[in-house]
Length: 504
Image (tube, rainbow, N blue to C red; front, top):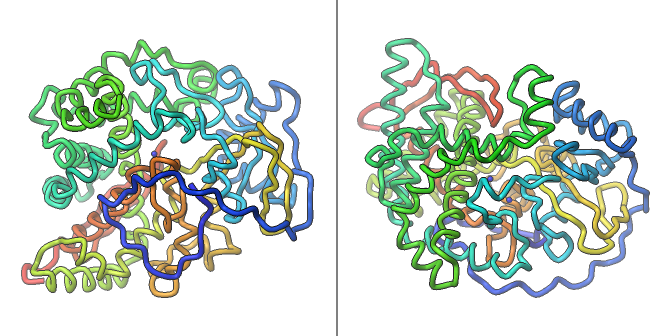
């Protein structure tokens, strides 16, 4: 793993994993006031049919990379709104044309389901075969106007609420196992690659916390993360680059769909684990008119693609930015966290974590800098006027809008030192900026409902990310890392872990 327009917010928003709303659809907002921005035609062009899409795809993946691809075009057109082609293009996507939104003012239109349609645009200008998801269009690909959207989203809220008491203990258990293993590897080798260990800990945590099952004690064993990674490749291969020779990637992942039959047996192993573990969720789904089979395929996607996929990126990102911040920030976090936990009787509670403003700010800052889902899409439901900071643009019904979130959430007209990691950015008055933190397919100041497209597990993800930072600094005074690259997120190796004093 993605609503209304962001509203003015001046008070802190407490984040709990069980408070996702089941509210009825919100009333439509009043008509917007006439734009005062100068009108401008959307700049840019798509090039020649077929060849323009191929050219942009090569620039995006190989010649420039995503950041330079968008930056160079924004500078060329002197606009944060412009036309471009987005991968994969031929022969996977029939139409690669999009209108790119790069600033924090225009981007939020992608959350407004009264203006944009979210049907089959979760991965962009193409949709993976439903053969990869049991023959069903999964919740992520449904527009809220579709009857099944509410019926499929509600069981996820039910799961989060029903199992909320298990989150803290199972997180601590799973990540204690992870860090014990890392300590041992560092002692033996002087360095410990983090990402694979993280993936196993995350999957163990989700299995234990959500379903009361330790994956290692089932037929799945420790194979879960590798099976998920392979399945995700079949879903996202058209928009990933894996570092293989260009000709291989172009002729396989980027030009043709990988046959779903090749992944069928691997997917079945994941499906069987959830089918045997989540009976209480299926009962709720069947009460709402959703078959057990459809509910199970949606649960596989929500757990493996959305939750596991999110934490696969977020936790290494937290280590990256915290590791780069240095010992002074580590000391401040350790002091704040340990003091709050001590006042709570030595227990990690939601109340105690609300008394950790720096810790909360750090989590939001990492989600701002490195959102786990950088791309957002939506198709205009009607003719629209979209405003950037500098101009207004007419959008025609049916045009595809695309937002590159790392630019929108590092908008220098919204955030001071926008490219930098500022640990206390969201402390005190800085909380007002939370409306511009958009990682969850909606503003941080709003909550997911059955009638919007905001991530059902938004509050759960923030809560678990806070747990990660809390557990880290209860256990260690400081740590050092080495940073590498990965097809999804950041590759981290830990080079030292300085344990906290026993009496801290």
